[in-house]
Image 1 (tube, rainbow, N blue to C red):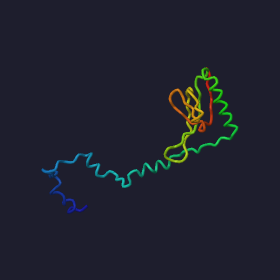
Image 2 (cartoon, rainbow, N blue to C red):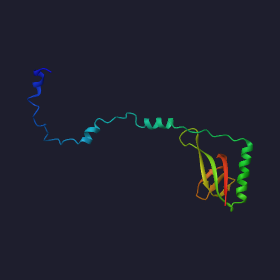
Image 3 (cartoon, rainbow, N blue to C red):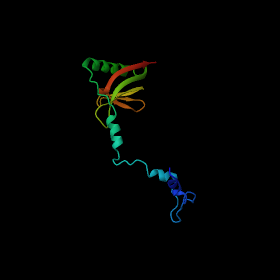
Image 4 (cartoon, one colour):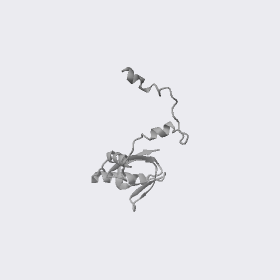
Length: 140
């Protein structure tokens, strides 16, 4: 650096920082907010995450498996007092996109409604019989 360039700021280098009498100093938080990223498309990031979320396709069971599941449900109905809990794997349709997820429930069956084709549990949950893919019972 030349001596001329070094001396350029000597007249102001030791001066006090100017402070406005009309405007209060901005906090560090507010100054940083000026430089935060701007999302021109609100909801775009959430839409991308939703699109990237993976769902399962529903498995179509053959007639033999359906008959076996119906038989197990009938057995559970016939000996309802001796069954402590039933573990059922079922398909739950996704509300936002095509497909869904397979979930497990382990609870005691309250009733099987053949008219609505649902299984109601003692904890209040209700699932459709057509969505069930497996049933395992736990006896006392």
